[in-house]
Length: 113
Length: 117
Image (tube, rainbow over all chains, first blue to last red; front, side, top):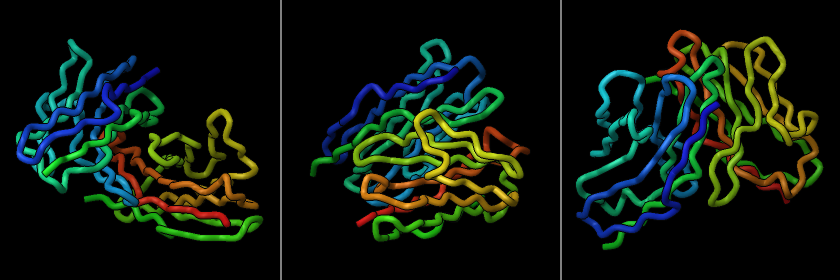
């Protein structure tokens, strides 16, 4: 069994300040973890993924995430928020024999000028 | 990189009609595809898992006679919403996975916004 918890439904930051979107997971197997972004009325875009290689994963648009097995976390960060980062972000876990991906509830990132 | 094409991106139909949504993997063979439904301001809920050449596995609460899934080839899966009603209006997203590199070959289509009048 697997699950993913995104701890914040909304995160609000000012442009130019750091972004932290939190994700904790539970998996009976070595998981693969993903972060996706969804802009309004758009599909999903892959930001980054962890698949048992380096624990610090760099993605597109300056985002990165660190896999911490001891904390079962995969938090998404960005040093400096941009207005265009405002969107919905989903943490996804996949693993085990079926590889069915499980989505977190999503975190809305709001960026203020 | 690998691309999953989902079509149409937006469809408006009358109540009682059927709508077909296509999901294609463009540069890899997708032995498994997933269909998700997203309600406004909600996460994606898995509807069914589709394996090439076999019947789809539906999640609890999903009507298999209403949401028909066909995965007849390694590059195409279709979702047909039969006799659509306004409550079926939603955003539907497919995901395709390759058997060869299961943990890496997880790609999503751009989604289909279905509006039933």
